[in-house]
Image (cartoon, rainbow, N blue to C red; front, side, top):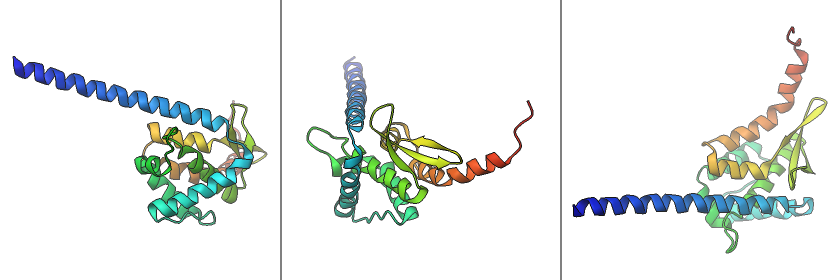
Length: 182
């Protein structure tokens, strides 16, 4: 009977630990979402440079905006192991601070290699407009970082960057095809 009480107590402690972890993640992502809404165009260069500096000092990695492939792979791999990013960028009152500098770098990588432009989002904060034919697609680099950390799969960030780079080719191909008969 004592063994059942011990096992029951351990199971209850495990469930409580999981619940606290989920609550912490939910709280952290909400804090990051609010911070994203406050990022201005003027802050992007400093956040981008901070990302580059932290990657160099904390990880010994060089993020170069001119090297799309190398930077995309480094960001993707590091985000796949996001705990190291959280620790390297953490502020006392903002554990998920990494979302801001990493999101800024992601957006800047798209700006440099896809001719995207930063603009204010109707949802609050900034978005990236990626040209595609006569229109542009919206991407949300800051939110992509949160999404990857909370529900993403390994390699998602690399695929996000690569698809942004290929968007104009896809739109061009679709525009040249005959519309489906209706």
